[in-house]
Amino acid sequence: MSLVSQESRPELVVAKFGGTSVADYASMSRCADIVLANPTTRLVVVSASSGVTNLLVELTQANVNDERRLALLKQIAQIQYAILDELGRPQDVAANIDKILSRMSVLSESLELDRSKAIMDELLSTGEQCSSILFSAVIREKGTASDHFDVRQVLRTDSHFGRAEPHIEAIATLAGDLLEPLLAHYVIVTQGFIGADQDGRTTTLGRGGSDYSAALLAEALCATAVEIWTDVAGIYTTDPRLAPNARPIAEISFNEAAEMATFGAKVLHPATILPAVRQKIQVFVGSSKAPEMGGTWIRHQVEDTPVFRAVALRRDQTLLNLHSLQMLHAQGFLAETFATLARHKISVDLITTSEVNVSLTLDKTGSDSSGQGLLSESLLQELSQHCRVRVEDNLALIAIIGNRIASTAGICSRVFQVLENHNVRMICQGASPHNLCVLVSESEAPQVVNALHQNLFES
Image (cartoon, rainbow, N blue to C red):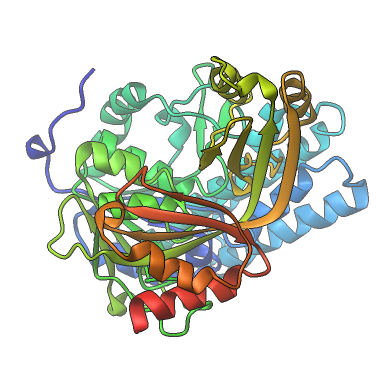
């Protein structure tokens, strides 16, 4: 099935609100006002209330005893009941929340006997289920017809629990059949981060997948725009906590935003841009706490394309060094290596090679929903069968994002001038015109980011 063209549909905005934006009743009320201020916002995607997913992740851990398990469940329940109390505890809403909390308890107890990722995914999905019910009730309280919708009915994925891959065509068909008819009558509130496989089993898209969910639904419904409401007023030239003179960016291109998301701009999930690019859906990033401050628009085409747009930082990186004499004047080593990584569903960010060495960077922040890491013992053993493996941790990836970086003279000299007193483990430049990347010690990363920002944006 091909996606229906945007021109044949009425204007539609999909708004997504992160955990801090739906942390409590006051936050939800502010976000409801943002939704109601735009009549074309008909679909809302929410994360779990701030802190809930972390508590649920702890519930999935093998070392949680009964006392701690009950304490975690109580803490999660208190977050939901605090919002319910502000709503006046409407009977139907309270009954739905109690049902989910009861299921949460059953699932957490089930993990003592069966530690399957399928059970973990269903347990991790309960936070979004609660927040969508509560947020819909807040909108109704303000006098607008609203209902919550179980996104698992339409967001079809494979069965790779913890990091499921969406089935784009199936999502488009199901959203058109089941979700779109509701939008004419209600502001629909649904869940980010979760989906279901073809057997109806709950899956998750990985940590931070709520942005991705919103973009996938926007793509399926041929929306006009996706609004990502978070706790910062758009995308900045770098993290203001690292460079006090960082400034907001009013507009960036899809290519620049994709690079920034991939290389660490936390306000945007790396996969969010992909559905938007496919359908040329513009994306807005703004602060739900201060919507009047505006934000950043991400568009297919922009007027201003500077050489330097931003400096992005991604912490908690792993460098995988592979050494083998088989590489010397031989064929097939890289193919075998990447086939091994593919079997373990590991994606590689950066790569450099020499005659007998390959170095790869892996993003540990891309672990699955339960927080389990990427480098399993079975993977390392498999790689060790045809090469010597060395793993380096506690590294950070710094990316200079912009335009025409590969073809603009003098860029490397400016960057290397900043880096001359730092130990750089890897440099990658030339594969993309939009980035130049360096790998440094995590302890040095804040200083390097600040120095690069001063040199490239402030001087």
